[in-house]
Image 1 (cartoon, rainbow, N blue to C red):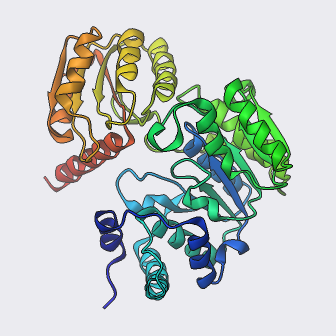
Image 2 (image 1 turned 90 degrees about the vertical axis):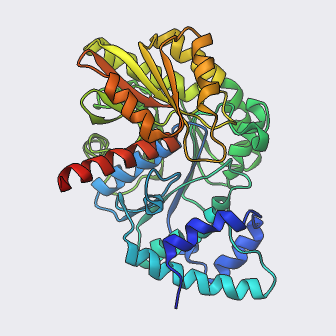
Length: 416
């Protein structure tokens, strides 16, 4: 009897931590029949905004009538959210059938001395199998961590490489400076393949231009986003992501992508967990580093200007983020009336009590800590009145757990 795909994959991180080299992944793909070589891929890396750029690309291509596969991470509730077919997560049966095909090949390769794929590697291999079998016209591929050594960088000839805004993140793995991190992200650039990049950070942009020059890759900087601000995004920073996505499609000159189609596609974009309204004056945003928090603050202020209310925060973060800086920015710029801290279900989660002390030291006195998201959400909703607006912020893991809490409560209400 074959194992259940979702159960098996969720257990992989417990016992498989060693990454395969890109050559070993290439060997696995070769054993699969090299399905990636039949796919038209757009490869996207960056610190902030890469998921949004992937979504913008997906919706515009769909609007032009194409079948689009999108590989993104992390997921918020279901791991199947990482493998999208025309914007919808893959169904269980399709995932199971693909898993079984890849599983048999993995077993064969392990007998030859290869490592078992990590969680991310396995999902990537499954996604490629699914997209090829489905006959995707285009695949939008988001990197996981970094770029140069990322699993997705095993692909050889994407149509284009896109690099979104870059800031300090995962410094333990990617380096402690913008130059080092930009170098890792620029590692996705391929010889002769166009690279479209965010030109707003001069330090990062210089590194990307240098890499592009070395690879003889045509480089297209994007620094202005004004023409996309008319699109009804909740967050101003999404206009820059849209500009990157549109520039990419313009360069590729794909049939059917007229300005009207592009505009209509952008209007339809839905990106869960990014300034997502989930209830009356309740918003979720997965900003999880200082640059992301800065963009969130801009969006929150824009909402506040239209309809002023007291701001409440529900916050959690993992330990390798610059949470002190994030907290100082939130307290200084938004002056929240009340802050509720949760501990998320991750071995990397920061302790809620520690975060609460940081908020208090930054001037947010009405702060309370809770050991899990369920109790934190209960408390935040209990204190929230008509005069308040609640933002859930600090981690995509937090956003996922809160969405699951809301889903369970809605289901319980329906049953009641």
